[in-house]
Length: 146
Image 1 (cartoon, rainbow, N blue to C red):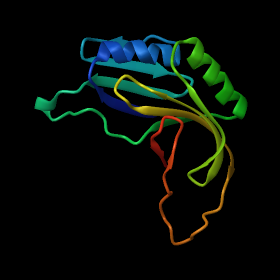
Image 2 (image 1 turned 135 degrees about the vertical axis):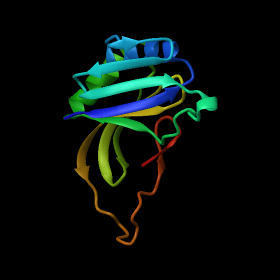
Image 3 (image 1 turned 90 degrees about the vertical axis):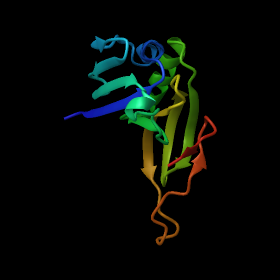
Image 4 (image 1 turned 120 degrees about the vertical axis):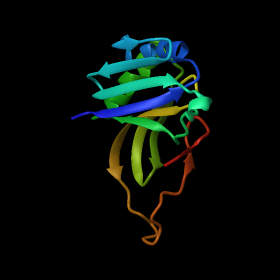
């Protein structure tokens, strides 16, 4: 099993160049208006297509996207890889977010989508049991997380 994620972008070519640096591989399929990355690590079927307002497709409007890894060392390795590949990575270590203590590294794609690579050290209790949603905090990119 693996996750499939499809996003609308302003410019497929620009986004492909960016995500090639992030993931270190070329897309399996690539046209002027569509690209598909078949990734093994992380296990992800990731596609993008040109946003076309006349067809009712606007740019993606998500809070953030993320890849959970198996260790704090994996977060550090991703930070090194992203930096080496020219992707600005902003670390956030030993932070409390979404009722968990985590290490993470943040970056943004050309369309402003925030991504986090993260490892959860421990789950934290919900202080107010009546509170069903996480209280958003600001991440390293200055955006609300949770």
